Image (tube, rainbow, N blue to C red):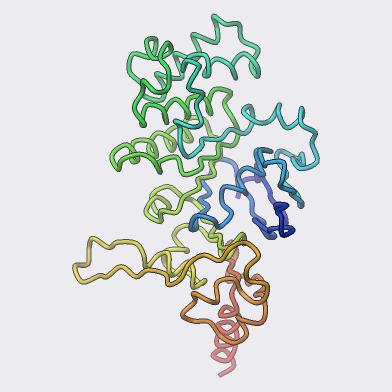
Length: 332
């Protein structure tokens, strides 16, 4: 395995509210290796985007982050504002969910694409213009010279997302974070955007964190998968292992909610209930109110992390039961 470009250890993110501290991410730990795609999956509100914003140093002022986020040997949570600014947009870039709200409506596409080239790569305006045109062409935008003079509202949703990808790639980052980059796009454009991101990854060798709630996207793009629920990492595995041998009931529920076009008799199964509000469940596993396999212990004790094999872990008491069953089988 290649050396990790990013290592997150024990990340805790809390928001200060009127009723006190509200936990958003609780003890998240993971790594991203060079040239791989790590998918972070889970329902809306599980802490996926907050985790990515922590890496980017873009948390709002009401949030406090603790733990370690190491990128190329530097702990991002220990850097000052100017130091993180030099890394953000340069070595680490991010594609946000909705390009219409991420692009500034009062500036042209060209101005917004040229800005990081001037700030981070110290190019002249002429050089930045030429490089911006090349980037637009690279991400598949036709007539890039004319698009440079247009405003975001003059482009389609797919075009705007391609512009966002061009901006994210403008400084040739080592790590690209894509936060549900296809959510607002139709199915055909979704496939094109995902294919574009993967092609650019292969061309540049960058690492990618892809945040999604779509297990179909995970199956098509991921090397490894991180499953989050209620601010915690509940399972991690390579993509093949996760789909063939999921361990956590939440992961199993996500997989059962996927359509199966090869089986005419297959019925989609929804996960019952809803995601708890941050800090609502103070005792036991946060998934136990929705879990069809919950035991008394799940309601009383927060499960620890169990390792099933190298690279595959889950946070569920059922894993301990499984280990004991296997031990009994080997003794017998």
